[in-house]
Image 1: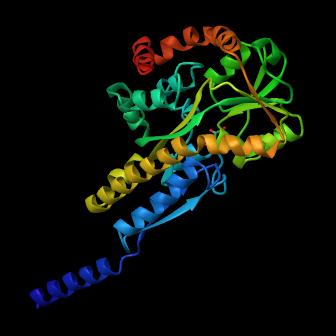
Image 2 (image 1 turned 60 degrees about the horizontal axis):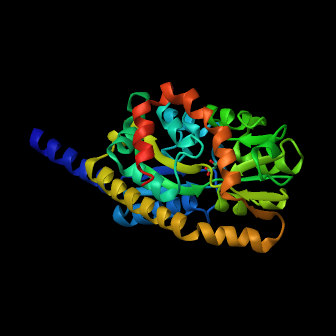
Image 3 (image 1 turned 90 degrees about the vertical axis):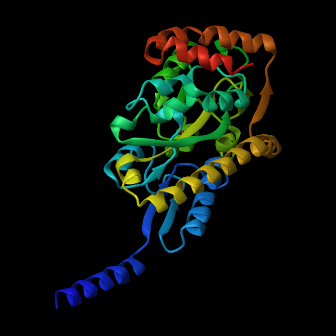
Length: 325
Ligand code: LMR
């Protein structure tokens, strides 16, 4: 009798497992589908569902549909969303180390950013928020930032007195204060309107974000400054991730690394195409600045490094500088 019952229970368990509902994974972000992050998220869905058929369902929410950048981190920690990929400028509440990516003119180009992220120091930062329940799954590129405004910005003095929208980063706040501007922390979903209504005069972002969110339609000039970077860390709720069945975690990790590689390729290959689209639209004029002018911006913003050196660590800054070979 006892054996019969045990067999029945075992059969039931097998049956339940076979019909278990797939694990639902919400991947939320704030940008458009066409951008590197948008493309990476869609690729993750495709690959994860292919590698783990019937075991996972991935729901992608672009354009701040589920959570805007003010709320997504909190939602992740609470378990309301499983995967997000905030800009590295948005982690200030959780770690000061990632502020390194906001230091103006630290990286010469996106290849230098990639080299630093791949270095031992860069990789170590992925686990810098473990204790806060946040697991870094990998870095994802977008691109270098350009400065836009409703007046031409040639030298730093042109930015004096202007209001700039910034991401919620103390380094970016200091960067704009260093040139006499007034920075304002505004959520990404609200930037277009803030520019359109004159709440702010300018902003800084990548070509793909500028084009896909139509910032160039509400700005008159974009200075090609490449003065900083917008990149991401793809993160998950550590407890959720570590609690997944081993085969699911393995499949998801593979899908994640492949989707990041795909997003990075989009970032590298299409940055200039997004720039060309902005130029072709003829809504905002794209300004090239001379080496000498760029040097003036660099000099004006340089004190920001010193201000955050203790928070970030001198060694880390030195390691990042080495990536500019
Ligand atoms: C921004 O807020 O400007 C960007 O970080 C948005 C993004 O995720 O690319």
